[in-house]
Amino acid sequence: VARFAGGMEYGPRALGNRSIFAPAGDCSIHQRLNRLLRRDDFMPFAPVVREEDIEACCRNTVKAGYSASFMNVSFQSTDYFRRRCPAVVHRDGTTRPQIVSRAHNRSLHTVLSEYKRITGIPGFINTSFNIHEEPIVCSPDDAVRSFRNAGIEYLAIENFLVQKEAVGNEKMG
Image (cartoon, rainbow, N blue to C red; front, top):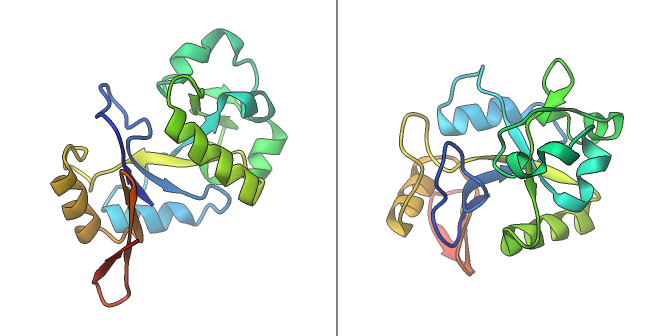
């Protein structure tokens, strides 16, 4: 699912408002995302996790919490997180999460809460909403163009959900 919501983020990473989300429970998602987004195989994926779930997922996060809200710090993963979200755990057992608080990004926190309620999984992949070597989408037009050009199945754009049908047409819901 590609997400275009609210204001554009500033910095080196997409932090949930111009992002593509994917399940982190199956490592084969790497190949699929890399193919759809024309990215190189060596590029790692990072998770997004709610603040209240982070201690179950990563070790020693307390002192780096603010920096981790920008996906800037790696932590050792817990056994629980390695089992539930293996696609975002590096070979050395670390992960570089974006920790989301309700106060910082209420809408993304709500998405994560619903995802956990439905699946029981504390996080998912958060990667930038762009095709490799293109800038991150900035406008609704950029979002629709990237959605059409990539193999993304859904586009959540503000309060609308667009689904790509098998024949390449889109329908709004």
